[in-house]
Image (cartoon, helix red, strand yellow):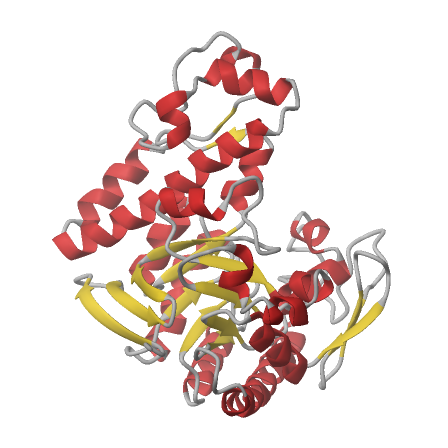
Length: 399
């Protein structure tokens, strides 16, 4: 049985970008690759078979949500995440750290706040009660489902993720915001490093204890917000650990994404893969790939689809707008997805206006196919040596 490995197959001249392949017990993952998010062991509104048909190679689920419901022990008893959800391919889980902390401080509201606001060590969204409390040992948090109290430590995160059984999992880290002070970001980087070391120790213990199960790779998460010295230090320190790859997460402004990813990847070893957490817009994918990222995940394609927003080579648009009521064209005439081959904008407009569940299914199929295909084409352009021309063509049409 294949355990885990990574090899580079082609490099992007003049940058840190590369095309490669990640080997996992449940199959190979050719990179760069987009990872659709199936938070609760499902990409909302579509079946695993549909996700496979539209070209997805891997699915990412969330440890926090599966821990709360149905429980990691149930997923374990089912034979692990892939078997539980009927997915035939590689799987990933994030550590739960982002959800624990973001739900606990009202992260969506924080994102809407002005980053020039006075920075603080204790960031909380206006009108939001703190539901998560961080200390050096871990995080105590209140469930968003029923208000029950729980505690995640690095060891608990590893135990939960080992039970969930994904091919790739992430070390427990602290996710900060751009509103935190420099001093807090420094302490957070130190805390994330200490937690990563504890994750490695617990991961190694559980790997021996559960030797009858397929090997699970552990990725450490680089933090440091938008500070170059902190990002580089975090990357160097984590690279010294016995981990199989790296995540790049934390607070950053999109116009700084390429620069920050490059700082990190310049410090990371070449022989291990790098996953850019929470990124999926076309402009960000190109910037991330050039800077050295190998895989990406984002909830945006499916979330936007459920709200009636669909992707197009020129720009995204809203199917609920009245202009589409009598538009009998597909979303994109050049798209090869099931939705565009069979349905019109007028029909989709009708489904959304009628609040039919099929609206979310058909729109999600298109959006996920759009992003999966986009990243697949980026990979092929690296192999063919046409990345620059391809990037300029795709982004030029979106200008």
